[in-house]
Amino acid sequence: MASLTQRMIGAAKLDAATYEEVEADTTATPQAMLVVVLASVAAGFGVLRVVGIGGLLIAALASLIGWYVWAFITYFVGTRFLPGSKTQADMGQLLRTIGFSASPGLIRVLGIVPGLEMLVSFVAALWMLVTMVVAVRQALDYESTGRAVAVCLIGLIFNFVVLFVLSKLLGVPLGIAP
Image (tube, rainbow, N blue to C red; front, side, top):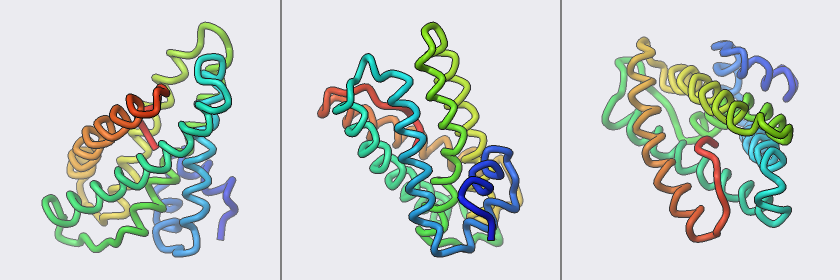
């Protein structure tokens, strides 16, 4: 079994075998949660002067909520509305693979460098969406990447709505990905 760091690197490198390992390891859910929190904290450090320490903690909590919602929507849409011929998954598999797909979010800590905030945020968001497509393709046993893209886009819309509402209720700017 790979270490947390090895799994995070494999996930960021779009390694399908890493996602298969995480999907099958029922003990990896706390690791996936940690990845989501680390990516959120990294993003928070990138905008710390805007959100402050309290905002950083709220953003971490909101990211966990967003992760769960996105995984649930992905599970529901991917298994009920857009299943492939080999699709067999449970919620835990989606939580683990989607959690690890947040690994590239750690680069958002570089947003602390003045002038890099927007670029780093954009690159991280795009990279995390790509890793999520691989995560969803593997977790839902899709033969088509296009089907995984469709499921991820539907989940993205719901995630935007949830994070927008949380952002307004909590008064803290929140990111788009888990």
